[in-house]
Structures are given as C-alpha cells and as structure tokens.
View 1: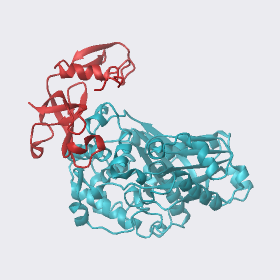
View 2 (view 1 turned 180 degrees about the vertical axis):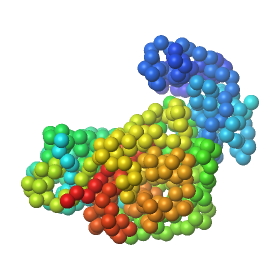
View 3 (view 1 turned 45 degrees about the vertical axis):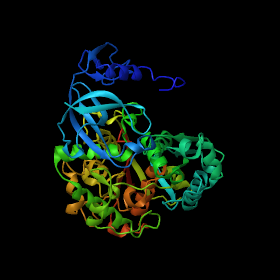
View 4 (view 1 turned 90 degrees about the vertical axis):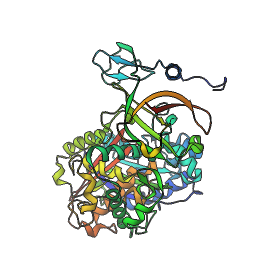
Length: 129
Length: 388
C-alpha cells in the first residue's frame, strides 16, 4: 500500500488483524454479528457491541469461478470468489489452494490476507483446511 | 389522494451506441414521451431522473438540470441513484409527488451510457453497485455476484443451467419484433449452454448486455388528464419499494430477495389487488437467475419453484402470466439508469395495445413492473391498470 493512500479506518485495521491470525467481528447482546467499521449493529441498532474472535474456520456457502474480471483482477482470472459462513458473520474472499473443480458448498476454509496477482493489493483469501 | 395516469412514454433504441452522449439519449426519449403525451410542455413541473454511472462513464455529475435542459424544460430536476433501480426509484418518488397533490404533470425517466467504457471499464463501473470493501476488493463482479446467488439457489432448491437457458431463449424470442431491443435474434437452448462461461455457473447468454439508451414517461394526475382531454387510460395504481443489506454476505438469504417481496406486498396492497390479479409482468432479469428470483419474490411462484417456469411454459407468451414480453433486460438491453422507466414504458404500451407483443395479452388490464438494484438491495414494484 502506498504511503499517499489514506487507510480505510476500521477495515484496514481488521485486515491487519486477520493477517496476524487475530480476526474478529462485533457482536451485540442479541447475538447479531457485524463487520468493521461497525458503530451500530446493522440488524437491531444496538451500540453495545463486543469485539469477538473470528472462528478459525468457516464453511463455503456459495462460490463462483470468475472468468471475466474487472481490471483490478484481470491477471487473476480464472479465480474463485466464495462466500463462507463463520458463524455470526459471513465473509467474501478469493478461494485459493485447491483445484477449482474440487470446490463445493460446504468446503471448510480458513481466512487470511494475500495479494492479488494483478495489482498486488491486499485481498481476503480463503484456503482449505 | 390523486390517481396517477401515464400520459406518454418514450424510449430510444437500446443497444451499443458508444458515441451517443447521455444528454443526447435522454433528449430523444424525453421528447418522444412529451410528444406521445401531447401535454403542454409549460405544464411540466419537474423532472425525476434516474442514472447510475455518469460520473464514471461521462465524468459528469449533477445530471438533473443537464437533462432538463436537454429536453428543453426549465424545471426543478433531480437525479436519483439506486444502481439498476435508479429510474424505478425516481418514478416512485414522482408518483408520491402527484398523489400528494403537489404536482400535476411530471417528466420521469433515465439514461445510461456504458459502451464507451469498453467491457473491462463497464464491468468495473457496474461492480460499484456492490460493497467496495467487502465484495469488490474480493473480486466480486456483477455477474459474479449473481453467480453466487445462482449456485446457492441450485444448492438449496435444485434446478440447473438448462433451466436458466430457457429463460434466455424465452426473452430473446419475445424481443424479436421489438424495434427498441438490443437483440432481435432468436437463440436456442444449445446456443445458451454452449456460450462462454462468464462466472460459473452463468454464461454469456445468462447475462444482459452492456446497453446505451434512455427512457421517459409523462405522468399526470387523473384530474389534469380529465380536464385537458389527455388520453391516459393506463394508471399507476400501486407503488412499493423494499430494501436489504448491501452486501450479499450480510443477507439472511443468498437465494431469495426479500426486498422484492416487501416491495410487491406494498404495491399490491396499495393497488388493492392480490397476486392472482396480475396478468403479465416485466421483471428485472439482469441475469437469468434474477428473473427466477423475481417471479418468486413477486409471489407469482413459490420459493424454489420459479426455476422451471420458463421451461414449463408458465411465463412464455401463451403461459399463465407472460413475463418480459418486451424481451426483458436480457434481450431488450439494460441501460442501467433507464431500465426502470423503460419497463413501465413497455408495460404501458402492452396494456394500451400498441406494443408489438400486445397480441399476447389482448384483454389484460393489470400488469406489474419490477426493477431491482445491485443484488436486490433495492427493489421497486409498480402496479399498472387500465382504467376507463
């Protein structure tokens, strides 16, 4: 990340934490999950939110193999984008480290931060575990 | 509360017109709608205009007054942006304005210029309807987002790519006589299944094209139409809008669209109809799977049963409720900000009897339009009825 680019407060801090293996989300008293920046529970409006550890693994709810990408991912194609269930929250990331034909709904994945092949930008990445 | 009448409609050709500016496109559609309505242009009180990506496509913000100027009106003009539901949302606000008694005659519409960006640029621009931090940065494209929904649908309810192919075949066939349509070309199931995969499981023929185009409507109060002998037998009797979380990952459902369900319930109650009264529908089929989820959200099919509707003939021209007789976004084209008003334009002509597909619904009096934004974080539904 270039020094001239302002960080996205909350989000980039969260990516840093995931990179360190210390991912988290926010949970309200009613058990709703939220992702940063998160001042208010998006489900119920509560401002009483507790930072909670993200589970070490999640399960793929759905995925797609993208062949036609936006310019920022042009050299990454074909790549898998997946939505994975981590309990109170779902995350969307690029799924790497397995043959595209082997990905299934239900595949167990861990989450980390890697770089895109096209621009080297940080990207949320799932790998099977 | 005043009843709302559709006095005039207008559309440009929908297609690849990369050289045409947004202002030129909207001028054509707006002028056509004003001519169709035959109202005194001095009676038009405001412009409600929908557009999604003009900052990216034309380096142009503040399009409201620019578009009023383009059609020769000096009126208050406001742009509405709700991604692909932009002009549906604009129309809804215009309907509420007339109903309140504040206005009697309004110009409503939308325009989009996309093809000047090229495929990569237009793909990038469309993607910003999704969540930048949590979706776009993970490689989600617009087709990719609907592919995620399609996979989840197949997993939860069954069905497959061949069912979706039948949606594409139907909508291409419907567009054949529609001279506004981007594609007047028949395809068959094998063509659709053999097309390149854009984002698995969706192929090229599951996706609407990039389209340049504009649409416009003149709406009036019932009283204005009566007092000025305006021929306006089609009324907007119901309006509803629903919302949902922006990112797919944050939704309760990955293969259902509650925003559509909420918009439809509100619109039907507003019109005093139930879903059994609906005789035809123009729905937001930006992808084939979107039509499936739309007809379920509108209540025309139970959740999980819409997937086979086109294949079984329920939504074809001779089906129980024909869907997208215009060709839909799939074949008519999807100039994003123009789509919502174009659906109402096409529905008006279908009900008036002057659409090339009106002969499929000769006695119909009640139609529904459904316009959705993003992965249906926004949905707008209108009920149109023929009134004497």
